[in-house]
Length: 340
Ligand SMILES: NC(=O)c1ccc[n+]([C@@H]2O[C@H](COP(=O)([O-])OP(=O)(O)OC[C@H]3O[C@@H](n4cnc5c(N)ncnc54)[C@H](O)[C@@H]3O)[C@@H](O)[C@H]2O)c1
Image 1 (tube, rainbow, N blue to C red):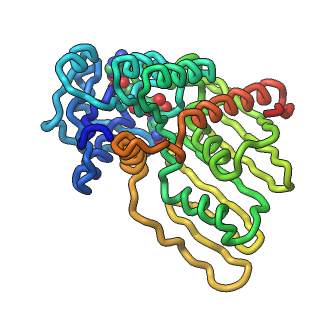
Image 2: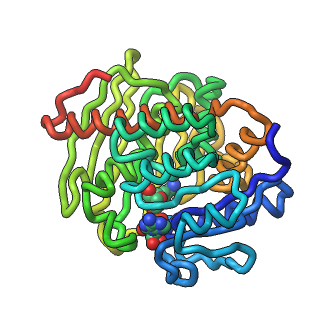
């Protein structure tokens, strides 16, 4: 068992970091032994600038209890930190995750794990060498709206799945450090940045597909709109769509519909509705959990209690990146299936 309280530093305080910050505040209120002690961003304006990303408008935050840095080495030198929460642009994930692991810190790194599966492999081997925990922020694995589905599938609540369809649709991200989202080489395109959530969820719910196929459309970034199919040995149909090319006047949308033998389950506008073949339509009651807080807590508790990360291991995050690479390969070959 490690120390009683996990001391955390956040690296990068742009769009998503504000949601992580809220997660730490929630955990502190719950009495979870974790404390955000420092935040580092090379752009000091980010500590005060309003952020608007597709997820959650303009949250307010208070950094009065954190020590603020614009230089990561200064932060590591001054602060006694157990874990670093990396909220940097994707093209920096590998470099900084490896640096922090080598500095003896546990690492939570935002999704996607890295821009390529080769980079992911380097992160994994560094974590093993350094004997530190690495977890990737595949936050849907902690989201009640998706855990409802996981539970229904695992417990066979509504019978077998006949088909499952997932959507994640947005206009092109307008925020971002030095325009990194708009550069395929730095973001990986919508398929790596946005679609990866559903690719990971498909693997989490149904396991490894036998093959994948995809068709896509390019805008200023490659694979900006993608329709993916996950081929399984049984006859269920699993498809997912992602887009970074929705009209600016359409809000961000994440949804699914899964048709089971005995009921259809739909996620629309943040609510799950169950449509049974027989009986009354009803809305699922869900715990009011925050996925960012839950993922942070999961890693913190696995550090404190020395337990194995079975829900969201980094090996699985790497397999998701690999599957995205295979979807891109298929999309570049006019939808020809790629054997996984
Ligand atoms: N889990 C989710 O649902 C979700 C949602 C949005 C973004 N993300 C992921 O989170 C990551 C960050 O995305 P974002 O939208 O917050 O990006 P962003 O560009 O808004 O924020 C990145 C921050 O990092 C800072 N930065 C850049 N280089 C730095 C360095 N060397 N040292 C310290 N700070 C540095 C920038 O100044 C900026 O404030 C990406 O990998 C993205 O894919 C995840």
